[in-house]
Length: 36
Image 1 (cartoon, rainbow, N blue to C red):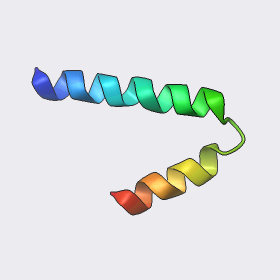
Image 2: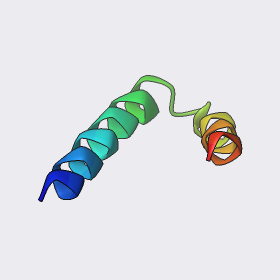
Image 3: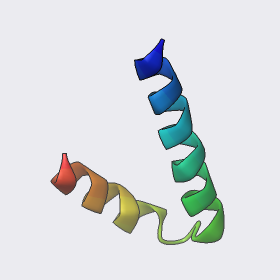
Image 4: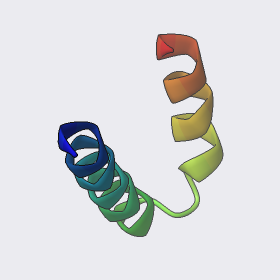
């Protein structure tokens, strides 16, 4: 349950970021992949 909530929150944050910078989505994804 906790994990699901955390994931949902993360997805929300990511969606917000994507909405703010739609053209920089690819760059963000690359950064996220590197972080992982």
